[in-house]
Image (cartoon, rainbow over the protein chains, first blue to last red):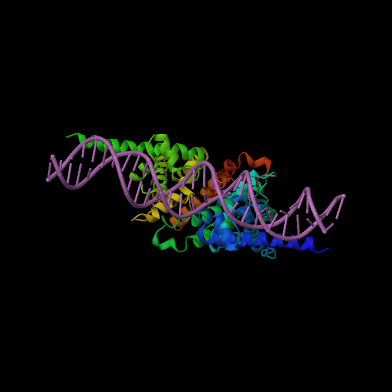
Length: 209
Length: 209
DNA sequence: TCGATCTGATTAACAGCGTTAACTAGTTTT
DNA sequence: AAAACTAGTTAACGCTGTTAATCAGATCGA
């Protein structure tokens, strides 16, 4: 009997439409200014129907957050064919920053906003799988860099954290409009590129014995 | 005639009490969960009275944001007597991270939240004076480090941006609960200290010719 | 086939939000 | 004494996220 399957499919369909509408509205207006009623109106359902598919507003945005990580994951996986680990590490940095610049809303959702993390905290297994995936990829590459002597030996996790912090710092100062308001005219328009270049040069010089 | 002066003083007093109440509530509950009515109730005035002293909610939190910068400014100025620029630079990093760990709410207000920046954007002169003060202090120290050959020559503004990004990255991953959820047990409790140490070592090795 | 149950969605309602407009009482100025 | 200004209030608007009660229709056991 294909009926229950069709119903299952229709349920998934509606869930998808909720998420699509929510993503659209979020990217245009941000989290606070996107209301459950606005999402509902866009898909032509009543607002309370959304609660049949998601626990609350935070859960909706946690789902979007997960999808944003899938998008970034695609871009990171595309770097698997860069064989030199050091080149791959630097390329990861460029991809990361570029993702944040091209998708500031998604970046916010992934690494800055509290709503999706709140949803994780309320959840039964409070583990941030999405973030762990990206971080593990970084750690593996750092590890490989150490193995061939292009980064000084040490705890790869600590090294990864510092590298992540640097690119995240640049990205979030950009997304939350902190850096342009302190930068001189000369550098304002290209500070992210200049900063990233400076940083990759740093990495290269880390291990000239 | 001291009457107008007394009235002026009373006005300032009430403004102060609004800010104190707002700060208390904000540090306890965060921005979204602190309502104008809650602030008003705490100082025993009606909610609309606050609008006689501040344009809107964002303006209240912009004022708190400014005061938070004064607190950080005090700590940074205390480093003026560290004469070696490189030591001063590293000490600034430690003070910065320490400030974020001890005052996560204030750090959020200063470098992550959108509300205070929104208030600046609406303002006539859209310049982020508070941030510029701290950043200029950093640039001056970086400049001094270059002058004595402890940092490689280059654009001190770009170098300062990368340094700021790194410590801000660590601080904001901490404040917004991103790093602990991906870190192994071994490093979780001390990742900020370890990361900062790694970073200052990096800085030191920057210019061994 | 009839009644009971389950399903998916709706409407109504609650309590709270930021903010504006209208108003009031008290003081100052003319 | 009348007019104007001050500092504060109350009432109201149009939102918000969320819960409870309800309703129509499909499904299922007898």
